[in-house]
Length: 139
Image (cartoon, rainbow, N blue to C red; front, side, top):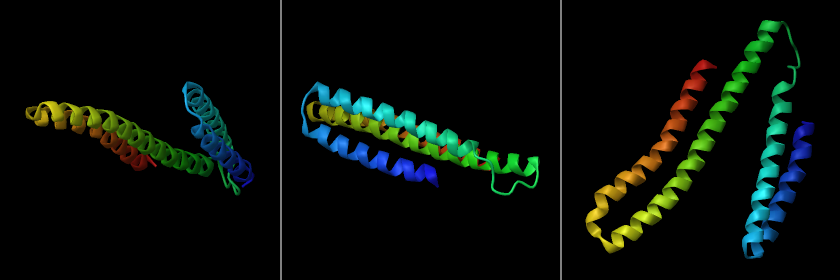
């Protein structure tokens, strides 16, 4: 519970800082945003490590503690797999979709090839979903 009390003001401050940085233009603003994102990633990983290393409230035995910990770790891993794959697919589709539309405006006969490339980019999200299903099955 204390982790959420610490994390909430940090997330709010990061949001406000990002809003202020986006009002600036240029490479320095982008570099500052990337640095802030990296700092937030390190903080989130530290918070995740603390949350996963906590002992259960009522430990009846070592076997129950190991089973409970591995199940929650598998679910967190599944969530990370889906989130990472979805974000990666979104970025890939954004770039390939923009390039496909630019190519189609010049040569409409490239429609089939362009859609195959965009479809391959969407496949990244499916891989993340498959990994999540495997991890949930192990939990």
